[in-house]
Amino acid sequence: MVRPYKERRIEQIPAITHYKPAGVPMRNVEEVVISLEEMEALRLFDIEQMSQGAAAEKMGISHSTFHRLINKAHQKVAAALWQGKALTIEGGSYRLDHPHKNELRHFICKQCSREWDVLHGAGQSGMDMQCPNCESRDIMRQG
Image (cartoon, rainbow, N blue to C red; front, side, top):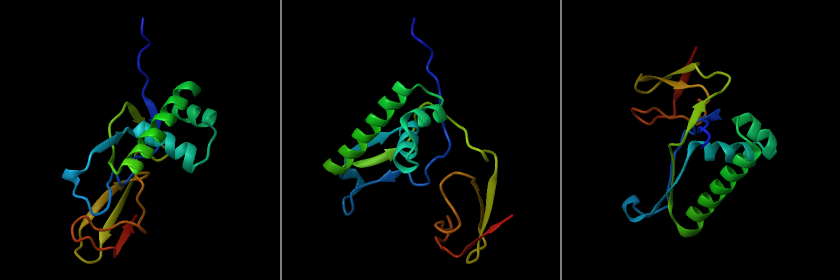
């Protein structure tokens, strides 16, 4: 009998989910899709520099499952870079699990007065954010 598939715990959804070679229209580029749990494995292992065991525990998976995830993620990113393919981060079997998962941050654009909310941990801060309406970077966080 096959074991039931476990959702992997991830803390963040990246703010940017599409990358492509510069100067090449998307319609002319092959695409490599990396799942959100593969991206979380990259974040924990390569950015946070956690051991595979600690990262596996944080994601709620076995060490061997984490090892397979990180290897698959490294292979996909390397292939996209080496072969000039677009990289899209989407999908997977995961559960968003971070310390402030229900906390929304409220922003206001000083140029056009547009207001919007961003889920805490979505990878955006007031420093690198732009208005979704007018693309101004002159924004402020409220509350």
